[in-house]
Length: 98
Image 1 (cartoon, helix red, strand yellow):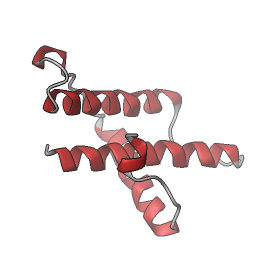
Image 2 (cartoon, helix red, strand yellow; image 1 turned 30 degrees about the vertical axis):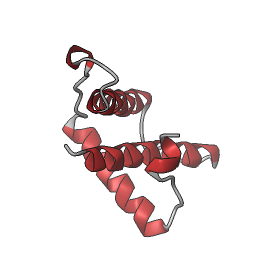
Image 3 (tube, helix red, strand yellow; image 1 turned 90 degrees about the vertical axis):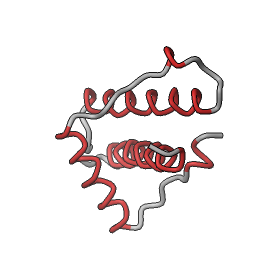
Image 4 (cartoon, one colour; image 1 turned 90 degrees about the horizontal axis):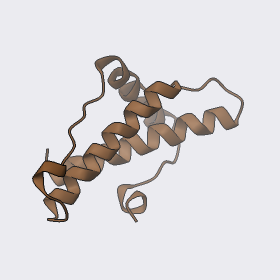
């Protein structure tokens, strides 16, 4: 995965979590269960470790690999589509990674 793809994936994962939290704050049904949110954060951590390695900040044995299960990935894609369809704001990767 290129760095650009990694940044986009981090942005998407961050935004689906924030979107889910916003729904909960409004008293609506959340999108992701606690365990699913943990899986999403596991992938975010793995992607950040890969970026750190690409920037020569860590050694190769410190790089984490994690891929979200297919069922959760389907929910992520559905939520991203919903975010785009509703015009919900979200955050860009340059803001997320600061």
